[in-house]
Amino acid sequence: MPQITNTIRKNIRSLSDLKYRRKSGLFKAEGTKCVIDTLPYFEIHSIFATESWIEVHQITINPDKLFIVNRGELKEMSGLITTPDVIAVYHIPSYEFNPQSIETGLILALDDIQDPGNMGTIIRTADWFGVHHVLCSKGCVDIYNPKTVQSTMGAISRVKTYYGELKQMIMSLNTPNIYGTFLDGTSIYDTPLSTNGIIIMGNEGKGVSPEIAELVNKKLFIPSYPAGTVTSESLNVAVATAITLAEFRRNTK
Amino acid sequence: MPQITNTIRKNIRSLSDLKYRRKSGLFKAEGTKCVIDTLPYFEIHSIFATESWIEVHQITINPDKLFIVNRGELKEMSGLITTPDVIAVYHIPSYEFNPQSIETGLILALDDIQDPGNMGTIIRTADWFGVHHVLCSKGCVDIYNPKTVQSTMGAISRVKTYYGELKQMIMSLNTPNIYGTFLDGTSIYDTPLSTNGIIIMGNEGKGVSPEIAELVNKKLFIPSYPAGTVTSESLNVAVATAITLAEFRRNTK
Image (cartoon, rainbow over all chains, first blue to last red; front, top):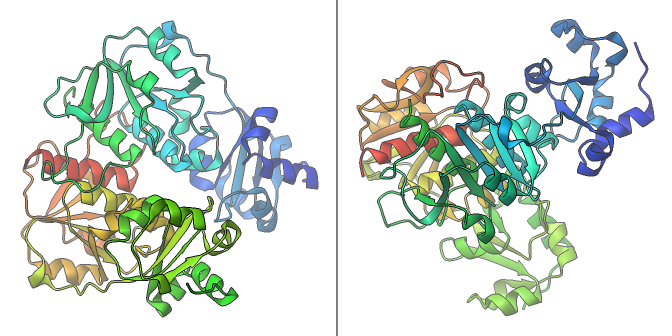
């Protein structure tokens, strides 16, 4: 079994930073649930765990990649508030965005989602509602941010995300149905919802940017209750995504 | 205008801790949006802002309560990652839970919600869907946690939360309709949903606790898509709350 060094510890901690993830091509999953959920789906670079964790979990892995560490070392390597018992380091998979290879169905497009927790929750919700492809603008938070990885609750291994020029990606899919939620849209309950198309969700503060909004040909609105008496100006973006996806799937079950 | 001291700075920072909030009876709202949204609704203890913020925002407030500070001082007083330009300190309102004074309608009951962001998002969503009263078990994260205050996006001033023995509070409301979401419930789309009743949402990891679950007489389930092929084991609790409330309000618009 390999020995841990100061350099290794520092490098694993650095995976909390986008720059270092890009440079190394690696990302980390922290905590038992997150590691167990993702382990079968990504190419393993290394695993760091306490001796007791390894005894309990009996994972099958090349021993050259398994490091026994103590909780102090895990604390140093982790970026989370609660120190995990295990950290898995994976190679970042590269999904090439190829419009021809994406099956028809519902696709999410995210325009500058900033909050790592919102991003993770959106991916988790997409998985629940059978959305397998998510297009992300370059301004979206990185899906391999440790907080995002954790809040996907394993869904990161089942939903493919593509980062790039959002407008180009949307246009290349050539779908007649481009949805988005807006305060001046028509009620999502009164609008025919297709089983194919793109649903665009926008930034937490600014909403959908004008150049992306002009691609939308079906503007939806999630009614508040009682209608017209709203004092909250909006819903959280992960919540709006969830209500929207639930309504699409409700109508196409 | 009063002068800021080291003690004041330290005390404001300490409002990130539950213990100090309880001791002082105060809580803080941070950042322009959060402060502007809450300012008219709570009893102001003090406001800390940069000179330029005060110039731009021209709020009406007793000058004895307004402290001009610099960004370094705000950073020291804040618990947030991004330093705000303004911090408002309010007196914590005391809502007495009185079953007689709660109007009929939909009420949320939260069983040990742990994450401050989830709690805030749930309150924000309740506000959107016209739910004015939220019962919280003693194990719920404090609503006056600064992260929770922030993620309510102002809804904290419109939704009343009551902390106490959840079981007793639920039973005292004496409603025939007690709903909860469970993996073995019946589809929320096939169940008659009342305009009156209590909707129980459970802890992020453990769900609804057994002693609370036994009060539920209408077990609901949010169908995944396609039905039966789910690999994600659950939805985030704020997301599940949102889909549930949307469905209740959809049917009673």
